[in-house]
Amino acid sequence: MYTTEWCPDCWRAKQVMGSMKVAYQEVNISNDEAAIELVTRINNGSRSVPTIVFPDGSTLTEPSTTALVQKLQTLVSECRQ
Image 1: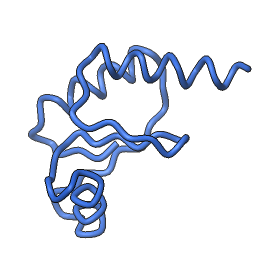
Image 2 (image 1 turned 135 degrees about the horizontal axis):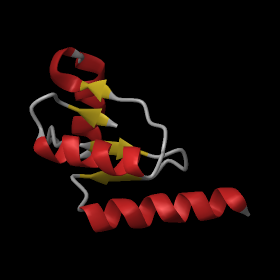
Image 3 (image 1 turned 60 degrees about the horizontal axis):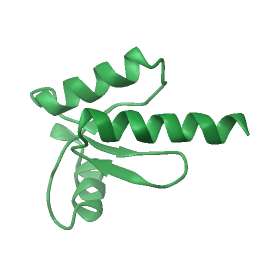
């Protein structure tokens, strides 16, 4: 999950992932040029956070709580199959 420390949407996404006991790696883009480049490439030039890259290669940018929960539930279901 690509974040910044000042982003309320990032705090919410981390809270959702924590409440669902989903492990994640956080990369703060504030001082990481490679992370900034990746985030802007994924988001067509925008530094939008949170940008979440999932193990299946899909991404979500600034997802609503509902969209994030649905994606996480889908990934968990796929892992159980």
